[in-house]
Amino acid sequence: MLLPGLLKQTEFLIENFDVSGRSVLVMGGNSEKAAEKILTSGASSVEIIVEDYEQLLKSRINLKQTPGIEVKMMEFESTDYKPNSFDLIFAQGSISVVGRNKIIKEIRRVLKSGGFLCSGEIVKFKKSVPPFVNNMFENSSLLPLFVEEIEGYYGERKFELIKSRDFSNTLRDYYSEVIKKSGEAEKTLTQEEKSYYKKLLNRIHHESNVYLKLGGDKFIGFVVMLLQNKKES
Image 1 (cartoon, one colour):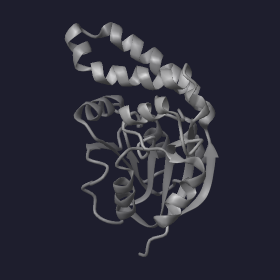
Image 2 (cartoon, rainbow, N blue to C red):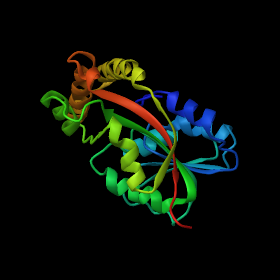
Image 3 (cartoon, helix red, strand yellow):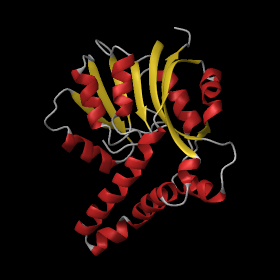
């Protein structure tokens, strides 16, 4: 599963939370393996939402042999779900973005009172990071929180932290695999496709190089949290 945290976030969830009989929403592309694991662990229903058509097709193809998981295309900031629709929302690397405040507001709306959020977040190890790291964040539309302020951020939004774990040690393997996979993919692309995906490929290479070669690992981490929604029913 090619997401920050790799398979560790899913393992963390299953170890610390009983998904049996729960209705679950998974937010973000490349989350098919997490969705499958949650379903086979006893969830009553699992849905995935992605934000673009390409991810929609990719997820549906990857889940072709796994009946019971529905994939839909929606904006994370404004979904089509009714209030109080889910017992659990699983988001791996899909909240640490520029629109995070609106996404969290939407998550609270569609979560049941007392429902849970398992969020994997790109974080900053220092409040002030060097320009080359900030540049990477801007190019990737990331808006990471300072690691020591993340619990307070969610507390202000009526989430109680149940448990957390630092999986920053997975990022080196993640970015190394990203470079490998993107290199393999580029070899199969036509010139027209390379031109179409140029911006995406450049972003991937830049982000990976910042972490692997320029010292970004001193400033960038990945933390997984299990949080409970404390809103009124």
